[in-house]
Image (cartoon, rainbow, N blue to C red; front, side, top):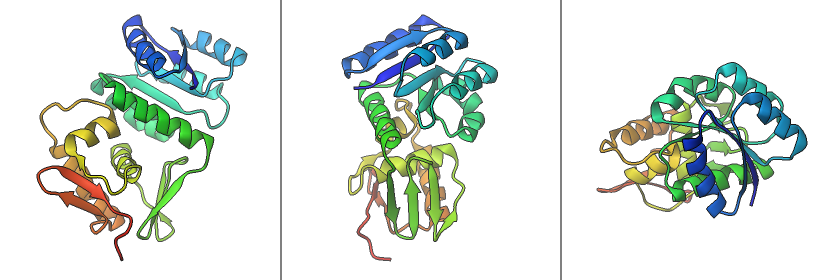
Length: 219
């Protein structure tokens, strides 16, 4: 259970997310402007903050600056709203929630973020290391630049090792939106990850389904 603050521009998004988060046992406070968020943060310790991506960059920075170090922040909105802000989200090392979002996908994203914020998590795959807290990926000790989408796909596979995951599941769990008919974007990102990190042996194709990450493959 976590104390979560939502900073929203309107009530429809907040009511949906509040319902889903409350069912999962979290305590949710909701405000509708940046100043109100900062006042809440000064009065209450929050384990997570969810901000509407429609807020201006200035308001978002204002809220994030008032948080204690290490508190996870999600920007939420439609695919178009989040992608418009994506480069700036990546620059601040913040996560995004693309709506609509299923209860299962939301629970997984929230749980992963809370665990990552509470302790230093990392895993090693071949010559690569993934630092989930800093969202940092290295290969043979050298940092490798991944796009936010590539990192999310890799992190999702790494958190579910030895498990065959469909392209639809990767779309939902990695980026938080429901299957819309075209899963080829997953294949494109997998190809780029394999090439950048030399993980073709570890990220295996599952025929007619999707992909699986195996830690136990010999180099």
